[in-house]
Amino acid sequence: MTASPLIRVMSFNIRYGTAPDGEHRWENRRALALARIHAFAPDLLGLQECRDDAQAEFVRSHLPAYEFYGVRREGGGDSALEMAPLLFRRAAFQLRRAGHFWLSDTPAVPGSKSWDSTFARTAVWAELLHIPTGRPLTFLNTHFDYQPAAIAEAARLLRAWLAHSGPPAPVIVTGDFNADQASPAYRLLADSEVLFDAYRLAHPGSAAEPTFHGFGAPAARQAIDWILVSGHFAVAEAAVDQTSAAGQFPSDHYPLLAVLNWKA
Image (cartoon, rainbow, N blue to C red):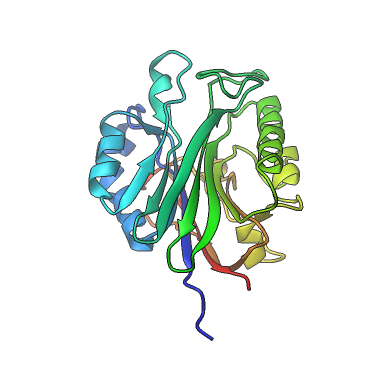
């Protein structure tokens, strides 16, 4: 029997392009960020903190094999240009439909926020057909706020959205959740009967590997980026790409990687 083609998934907070980061500003590290994406060659890519300006144009123009879908989070101010877009490789997936919602009590209202959230936040999703196998899946990417109440309530909203999307179907979720494995949000999502932490499945019993590092600051290291998968997938590999070059980092987050296989 021929094995099903593997699905390569990356979640990567690329740090917004206008951040006043001095030597770590976007112009100095964008080539390294792009190189890490090309090195892993994901089929599914969830980005966070990608501004809908020259930063998004750089991503689009240098990843021509991918479909890019994202929406501005809005909400006023310069940060309204930020997106948490998803990308999929056209050779691997066919788009059926796509959509988005805001992480708030009024998810259909653009720029809306709730629960003491500092910024408006979004989730974007796409229903895709995996071309090599003809099997459907839903891919969702998001970026939670950093206020504790907003994190917990966004997790409840996301879990409710998954529950109301229909019968259990293959789902892959990427995101910066601003929360670790001890958080209520993690218990709501990764410990549910629907989604499981890909890194934990690949490394049972091991501590989560930090993804946020604040451009190499040891005290800042936190495991707040997750790849979550439904029970339709087996995790062949999962890792955190800690590549840097001569003191330069691709972002203040390391990319999180997973290689998935379909279960029979």
